[in-house]
Length: 276
Image (cartoon, rainbow, N blue to C red):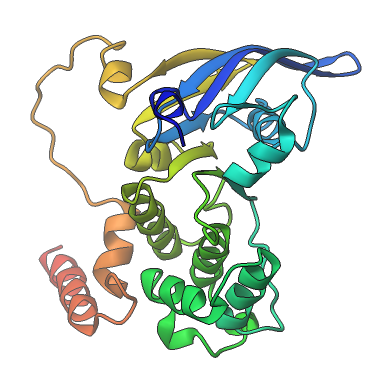
């Protein structure tokens, strides 16, 4: 990568438009994604998030506007764009007949990389899957499959990764496992464009958040900048009640095996009933 490329945004989008017959999906989308950052594209179903990702990953042609990824125009240098990126869709694209390690080795072979076994072992350790490496993926939990899917996306060290609603359909514990994985590889310098309709997910992960609504970006900024769009907060005393998520993790623990936490939570529930 040249010095000039280093100072350019990893992703640069201006005036992106896309229609399907009379349905206008994108109506002039503009945004930049800084290198090494996590950028969340937030919006409801049908807002156009997946269409943006398909255009940036060269799977779909825009009707108008320009877009570049890693300094390469998606319309003019599609092969260079594809060499720079990895795309993880809404559902894990793993082979359930193979083991976790075999899935990783297969992708490394397909990318013509040297020493696929070492690459697979390193990723298994990085994503806490070493103990399950020899098991068939059909026996994996949802969170484990998703972590394996993301690990497969990182083979070849892509500079930019697109995550299209990565925690769709996952339980709370699996969702947090995926969040930790995303944060980890972003810390290694990978640029992430994350599409989601989960407000909590965007708040937990993103350096910047853009809201896509009716085919346009209506706001784009850091979490702090977005919160400043609201009136100043009023300080009031409110007794905080535990959320359902608090209860869930108090009972099952972070790894689903925390017996002490279950016992404490159960005792607290019994005490509450006795007081009533």
